[in-house]
Image (cartoon, rainbow, N blue to C red):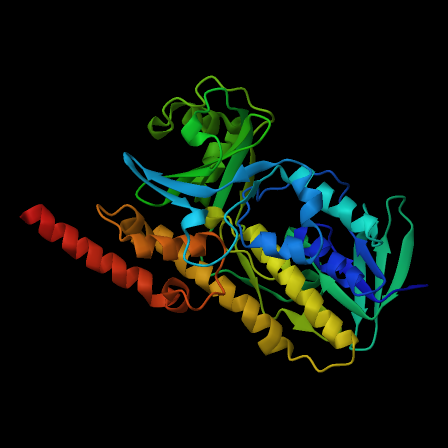
Length: 413
């Protein structure tokens, strides 16, 4: 039986960041990935905060070399109203840019760079069972040829994403409190891209805050376009090879005909009921990272940032544990990750309630407030010097109420 220090399940951003960091510390690390790369994945617009995680794990240079579309901000639109956030103007002293990526290319680049560091990266390997305790874990898996293997490790990091290997095997999943939503999306030619739409993600709100469209430009001239809404709406949009999706994207007034004659790179795909949580993020001999912990909603593009953040922190705590130090997994890991998730949860809630939109689409938005919100949108949700992080659970509804009252008074005068 093969014996290693750390087994990482999943070769996505969380898994590769964790594995690369641990390899830098001298550990023997193996990744088991169920799928064959490159493979399609959603979550194509990154946040600047993840640049710190890629840098610390030694992976940023490999991604820089791929020349992905540089992302310097985000724009929100609702009818004629528009609010653009530029990361160079944010409150937190952080990265002013990141990338927009086709995940098939991005994830493959991460996996190849991780393998080049000495990590054993194994594709088409499905984890079948895990027997875990604090001292050692025995994992059984099936390889690409159908052969069954066992591997013994000193610790396991589950970064299996939507596959949620350990939450499934150990019955750790719990339902989300969010309304069941879905997304339907495709990549389209973007021949009518203008200077103002060339770099950054555009988010168009419609249907009384219940639905929205993303447009994420890529460096090859194509653009990812998706519609997010209530589950029933998305099921209807995706039916019959996405005919209603295609019609809507080409005729949606706020897109100004940008995709009116665009060819699709592939038929529309959809994801339904994506929000999910877990009962715990750790146990004897293992820790969860990335989407294996919790996934909220794609509205603020937080998925990859939480993946890299939790991947890096899980690796640091694993290193500490393997060095014989006492790790309080609740306070040093789960609570830290959960704090960041809770900040974004408040903003997701605020988006769909309309409070966030009342603030960013206000007639006059205070520049200091805008810059503080910009830091949240850049992923710096652990910066508690920012009042829009520290008071995340109350500040949006309170400010939205003040703005609505002020604008109502102005309308009466």
